[in-house]
Length: 344
Image (cartoon, rainbow, N blue to C red):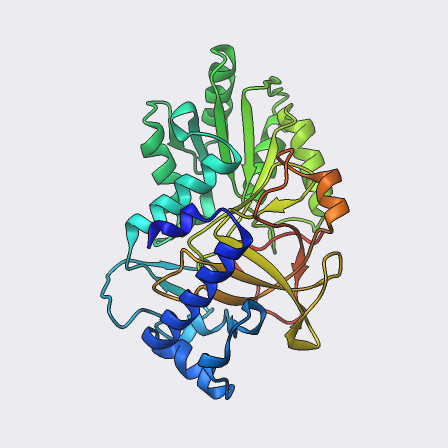
């Protein structure tokens, strides 16, 4: 099934989507029941936009897993103990690892070239985090002795960043948004200046709801740019229910790997889609979700970029078979998720 990583053209992507839909209809009970409930004949699905997208809330109350697979590995969404948390069962761990590695390489580079630091307190304190698994995997691929996590030990992180900057080492700091802000507050309060370094990359992973005063994503990125003294303020977009990641390399514009797509559905009509440039709800195709569900209707708001915007704002300097999009917040009345994203 790892042939999804060989997708090069839109035609190949469309063909793989239709094959995946038929496989999941036949092998994933909850998805089959959902499609049948909608009175949709799977044999009549010849267009990707006609594929039913499973509401993401279904992961909270149902086991969404290939009937041919058994597994003890699952990821669970973060949230308060009062919440009914989503569970994503993972039957093909190697497929997830390959998705992590190939997506990272497509947008940033080889893990072996970087030292990875993690400032992810809310995730380190909970079990079964897909984000921690991802960062752990990249650290193992990196193999650098300096790799490590920092819970609330800001002083130690400051000293590590200072020393690695002196050594001109290539460093990636993965951080949940509120924790990165806390770290910058610590540095400011203690009159410690983080030395500018073109070798430092900050990758924020969202996570602000209920933790600090709400601000736009652009305001947040500007604070990080000034505080960390680097232009390389990136963002990562994924969730418990996915096995792939989209990255933003600037300007709050995300890009998907070639086996992942964003469609924008009409919030008034969940079975219709909006053209590029218009705001709506985000549907995600993640072909790495072979053994759960590749077609997920989220509670995030967003927009895909028009061709002219892609040419102007393209994050990697070229058009690819993937698509570029912005995340604009959450649909009103939807649950607050642990890795919530700021309103743009």
